Image (cartoon, rainbow, N blue to C red; front, side):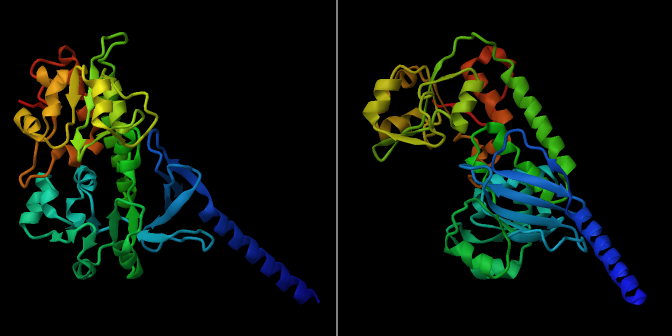
Length: 376
């Protein structure tokens, strides 16, 4: 009887010890703080991290959970996740040029092994690796070359859409983890840039990623503070006609916030939308024919091209005054738009360009825009 009691006591002690160890590994230590981004959160545990991709409609709702752990890390069975990634990841397939600048900033160019439509990439560091045949052309995003992708066996494919088209489903089924990068859904300019912290977690460079973002945030806020309260704000129009429809940024969009922070008065600031809004030409003309400045007129690179496309453009005051600015002239070696590749991760540079356009007196006379130029 005494022997049974002793055995029972030892078993209970053993269970309590296992429970203590189990709880120690389960206990959350802290989080990677985010000040602007809404689409992700990173929870730090003793031996691993949980990266959560969140719904923009309901931040409490997690769409996907990624377990990030180093080799041989102890992870309790009770931890739930969709994909497990061994960090630091070694090889990556990206699907959007916006995925490129964070890799370069973190010094992880060598990790990129595949990309659809390589000509879109402008980064000199990545173009050098392309010239050395170290990055594989994977075709088109909507139809990635499945056989080539399998031959690469990347640690991760970074997708840009939560919608799982058939290609993504096939990729997932063969065991290649897919991380859905939703930076394009962020409404805050700094929210997009803050996604570098996701890359920091993937490459086990969290501190470096936070340092890079802090510098961007500081530069953005410093530029914003150059615009004094009460300054006269020029009226700003954005967009152009596309098949008889004029798409304008919503009044609560990323673009609208940049215009506001740069000291502009966006003509559609009252549109309570975060995405583009389709309007008729007549509607836009009635609202914005007297706008002082016109930015982002589609892919036009000069005024003659605009005039040849539509005579209606000549009726706008901004066209008549030649106050139209676009990012189309700044391209990489193979024609990729620098604005689309670098802009989302460097809102501080876009903001300075817009301040230079709206209030040139607020920046040095020798200021050289990173993206924008006046159309001639």
